[in-house]
Length: 133
Image (cartoon, rainbow, N blue to C red; front, side):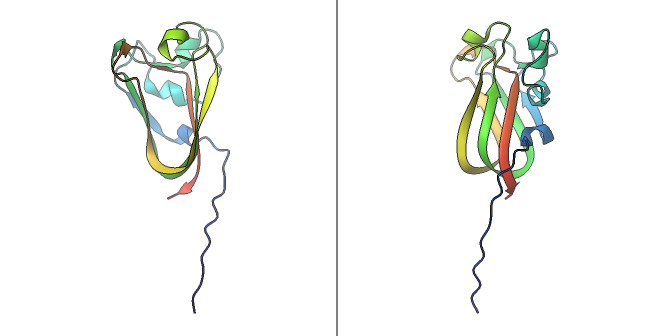
């Protein structure tokens, strides 16, 4: 007897980044990689203290380890709102952009600025996906 199995992928509204760990190439003062996955999208007061920021360097990078493999359908990034965002991330201060990933599978989310020397600032990175692969 032949049995057909159907796998149902349930779309979750849970931010998987909150479960992960983050590292970055360098750290500007106390603005470590984990600040981009602290769940604070719009920071009160001095916004940069809630963001991850690298030193001004060539090819700065940031990496999130989700600690398991998932089907990822969306990654959302929120930019710094108080200053410096126009040249650091090339989109509007305080804005949030989302990238659709279909149902890409993976464990790591990497961000970098290639072939240029600058700070990489990420105020919040959210990763949405479903079920372990």
